[in-house]
Structure formats: structure tokens, C-alpha cells
Image (cartoon, rainbow, N blue to C red; front, side, top):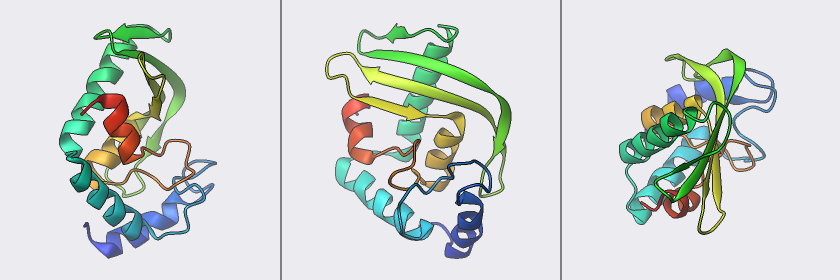
Length: 150
């Protein structure tokens, strides 16, 4: 688990209205350090590796960008659609500024989907933060496993 002081400082910036109108915590009452610790444990139980998941999310994003906003089929398994918004978003941990976008990935066979952004990928890869429960960009470990097939 990352340094708790770093989590506490970032947590203030994750609240509703600090960086985004919705924030990063959803309706999750847990402290950020506890969210990260629980998600790291779930990743271990599911056999997921943060760097591999991030690389697959990036690969699907890159493939989806070829659709110029329209859904594209990737590897016959996923429909991927990317959308851009004006602006950039800072990481709440203070280590970068990221393109403001959204990526939607839906499995063709099950219909199950993930929604994420460039900032989501960064938070997952660098901070093991998948956002709080109820957040619009929360990446649930079980959903990652099912949708990506990892």
C-alpha cells in the first residue's frame, strides 16, 4: 500500500467539486488508503496485475480512437468507443495532468462494460486507485477480470 499521508492529501482533492464536479469517491465512505488496500487484495485474489490491466486498457483506448467517436470492434471481442472533452484533469496525487476523455469498452458476448478515462488508467497503474464505490469511473476488479478476460 502507498504512503498513507500521500493518500490523505490526495483524498481532499478527490472530494466532490475539488477537481471534478462528481469527485472520485462516489458514495464510498472508506478512506482512500482503505479503498486502495482492499482493491490491491482483490487484484491479488483474482490474479490481476495493475501494469498488465493498465496496458490492456491503453491498448483498447488506442484502438477505439481510430473510430473518431464511433464504436469500433476490437479483436472481435469488444466494442470500444472513445469521447473527448475539452480540457485536462490533474491527478489528485499531484503527479501529472491528463487528457479529459472517456472510453467505453463493452464485451460483445456478454454486454458487460467498463467506462474509464486516461486519468483512470494513470490512477490504476501508478496509485492502485480504482476510485470509490459509486463513482462514475470506478473500475471494479471483478468487472475488469470479466470484461477484459484477463
